[in-house]
Image (cartoon, rainbow, N blue to C red; front, side):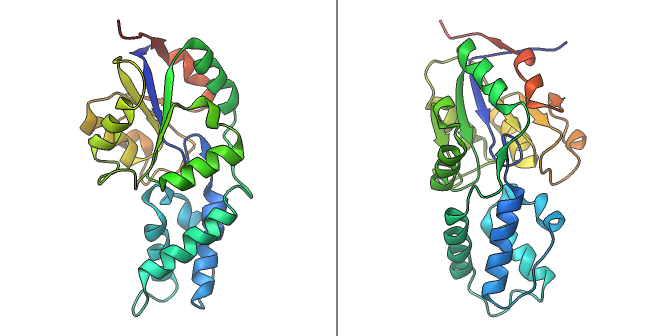
Amino acid sequence: MITFPVQKILFDLDGTLVDTAADLHAATNHTLSSVGREPISLDQVRNLTGYGAIRLIELGLDATGGRAGLDMTSLRHEFLQYYSQNICDHSSVFEGGFDMLNTLKEAGFQMAICTNKPEAMAVKLLDEIGISPYFNAVTGGDSFDFKKPDGRHLHKTSAMLEGAGNSIMIGDSSPDVNGARSAGFPVIAVDFGYPDRPINEMEPDAIISSLGDLPSLLTLTPSS
């Protein structure tokens, strides 16, 4: 069995650690309703949750009559305001997540969130769902002038963690896999998230079907 010698673990959030699709779907439909549009289905938004509010809004508008004459900045504000107020109505940590985080924390790994979700939203979700204490850093899609799949997002996040040991990315979709490739980090993908295309086609270094499988693939190698 292949194992990865690392000190730092960067986690994507939506679709990797937390099942957030239902709350993002609700925010999308609220935004559509605000301009008189019909709702769309959960299946229509599930695989685009890693691309941010604008992409979800665009998808919803395209499916219900188009974007002509609409102010996307205003709609994004509507989406984020609703989502912030209802961020954890239906979201939950994926099965095995709490045990996995406990195991890795106790083993001494440094852990961070590296998501394209706005940083404040990510922090709020982590707080409300009860997993903030596990992470030594949180960065979002608005933390820098770049975001995944730009490898600099991963490097900047890794640099916020103590030590100079190797880093690995854990994710569920192409921004995670491509971001890790750009950064020169290995990447493990989950097969239960919200991939924008089949996860095996992205050729991550390993694929897991449960968060509980992750600790056995990692070996702690702190920097000297």
